[in-house]
Image (cartoon, rainbow, N blue to C red; front, side, top):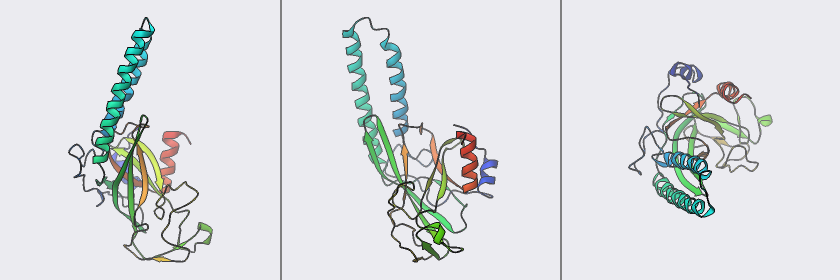
Length: 246
């Protein structure tokens, strides 16, 4: 993870930035707050990963299968207990919101980023966030970008770009959403509420249930995750090349 300084962030966002109204904190969990909206859940996965590494290192020192099996059973019990804890705490996050920084898009406004679900699996845990976006002016939507006249937007091809970041402006992960779709922007079948040629009035959600961001606590260290920063396409592309090499 690399740091994006406030000066660079300001340039990326086109000027002074402020926390938008989608960051009102989380009242559904005692452990979650406006600075760490995912509470203790990400730290649990960091602890599990550390224990997993330590167990593998210690496994070489066991002199017989019996002692190894005993240690393995103890480790599995620890993991199971921690996964149960993660699920319990993850469910308490539902209904909370994620702070956002957004003044990037002249025609769109991010009004809310709400935690809608938590899914735990075999060594996995994902926080589901849905982002509500509204037009700042009346817009016409079309099926695809090739059908759009000037000022119109594609239901299929429109993207908003974001960075998941720590409070100290270290980048954790980049991503993108389709504001018109209730499922992931890279899926073939989009879940839209509008059809070709319709007008969406200013202030009316592009999708009433929002567009998803999946925060996979088992894939990245989100223990210090604090905010979602929305970016222009150019800034997103430049950062992607800088941090990922393509």
